[in-house]
Length: 97
Image 1 (cartoon, rainbow, N blue to C red):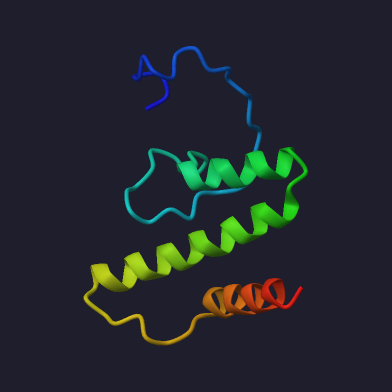
Image 2 (cartoon, one colour):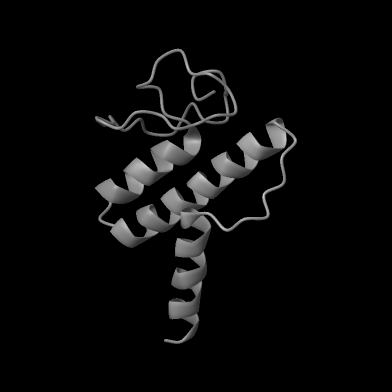
């Protein structure tokens, strides 16, 4: 996408060296090392020293993947997963500050 859009052509390119493997489930990546946009965002937040924001985005991404997988198999997502519980707890802790 980045190389195909003239709107993005003027933006700087940052080298990203990650050991993470993709967890994206919407489309199959050509390689496990090809991260989706959210995963790249997580890695860039880490590089910027924004560990908390990277962790929160990571949990939202897990919830997205879980919801997508359930919808793909036409299963309800009524049960609270570990990732959902983490976000609920995080939100509660943030609201009480």
